[in-house]
Image (cartoon, rainbow, N blue to C red):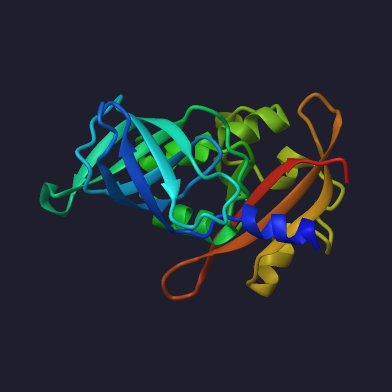
Length: 235
């Protein structure tokens, strides 16, 4: 029973409210409200009315104190004015890795809302900060995005993986079969979570992974493709 309670506490609900303190303020007495978006192991996107600047050290903690991690220290890496300049959206990198599970609905929203410009976006920053491998496919199973952790876990470079089918890259023990996690998710229109699957590294070694997948839908509910999250697992 205790383990289940710990699991519930470790799941970050998105978005959620934060308290926000600027650590370079010697009095350390000023706190600001902030709303989080896409909090992951290495960083977080927040919106706040705090007077933030790039390279500023900050301290954040959630209003929900049932979470496992109460205080997080980080540094602001980019700032974008919003709401006519009265508020700011900023990306913050953490001083240490925070191993929070990634809610699939958040990743799905990130991919669908990400503009296709060929330039680095705040979403790219978040996806490349994640410890888990993340990739997306279109309706023809061609890989359309491949984050840094996916490169490290598979041995494939992003530029080589994009455009190939996921079966060509992963060569898993369920590729092309009914038990394919991505296929099941697209067929049912629902997320599939924490399935154990063996993939093949670029060097030929077999790697046990825990995989979750979710369909990518447009505003009209039409399937655009799918997104999959994976990490090493002993099974």
